[in-house]
Image (cartoon, rainbow, N blue to C red; front, top):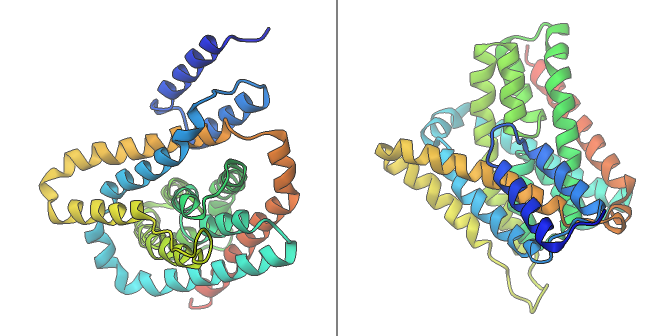
Length: 309
């Protein structure tokens, strides 16, 4: 039985409301969106709000970043995160060429692997003018690997008898999304959680320079002008405001929550606008790229960190 446009609008409204509920994770929202699209339940006008929801969410999430903590930890964590980000991006670009993967998908997966999963992909996507299927498949790869890492990283850590400090650093570098880093760190121990969260926060700040570099590389596309990602500037402003005016901590917490929920909404919208043709265009090579890149950073960071023991 096919639904009327009015019923489809109502269904979308209900799902958007549920995106603000705690049980609706980014992965679930993306999956529901893809299911809606593949069953033909598409909203005619909602796709145009995808980019705006992504950008606004990134800006709002900036209010939840503790710059004081980042500055205090940067003396020990900055160098290792810088090396890992540059290494992963370089490896990702090389594998993209070897596998002949779509350039945008390759950049999105590399950015998500190098920095902070879905948040990095969401920040870079508008800069690249990425299409919905490019974003959604990059996110699917990241979410699947996040789920795997959350389970196997603590097991590996205990098997090799890693200290909480070593495990925290390894998890922060090799696991994509912050939520999975926090989950893995928390299951390993309180010190692992603290270190993993701090190093991950430093890593997340690389969204800013990476987005600007990608924007500059787009020069010559679209009239020869550099597309400046203005929302990244507002992202920086939100971080600075939270740092300079600490008295608004309660308000910042609400804004950060709204940003995280907005990201869930954005992922639902992305999923709701893909098709079988898009899936075929992305291809299995995109998944192979993401898996291999994740294995490379996981193994290399493990060797580098444990070599100092």
